[in-house]
Image (cartoon, rainbow, N blue to C red; front, top):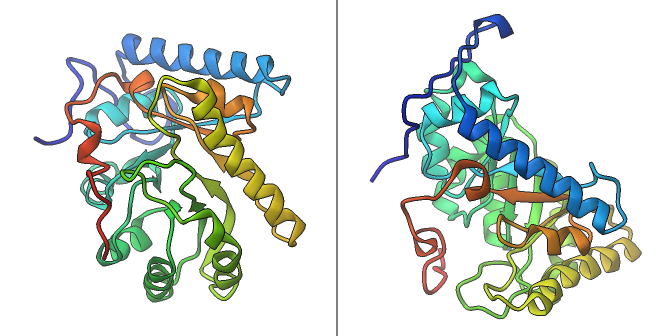
Length: 264
């Protein structure tokens, strides 16, 4: 099953705003609602309403849907699979988009990400860092990265064990192709808000501990469609929103996060 397409909606990325033709009421409404909800969550947490940036997650949705989003002013999109970035980058090359890798990245897929992505938020192990660095050197590129930390007890979640973060940050200092900007995590999948907030709080505490060691990690990417208000309450600077913007997806979560994380 390939990326989904919008119904009859249409948008173009031709040069010049006047050339954009779009019928995006449904997507436009959802985007407005998400922005309002994020701003409200920030205010409820005593933060500036613009304190948390939104990363639209376009996984499984095809170029036509992304063009609709572009017509609304979006230019930065999160993807879970390197293959989807590769498949969409060509058809959308005229849109000037920034692709953000947020899913588990195998080392043998580092080449595509090094060539096409502007950022990786799922850097979670030394072997991947070394592979990505080599590929970025070959491409003559530098990108922003976030270290993904496993703050959930679930076996299905990827991420660097928290106790390994100090040594990993030290190691990353040796890679001049990657600018370490912050941390990322996935919370436990549960209806218990206390357990969810604990995952987000742990990431913030790890960031604060790293700051004591001289690391400037201003960004905390945490929170998705179902739990972003809790993440914002714990200090998220970016929330990754997919279904609340683009609608339901045809694939289950297991398509992105298998039962047992695979080594590579």
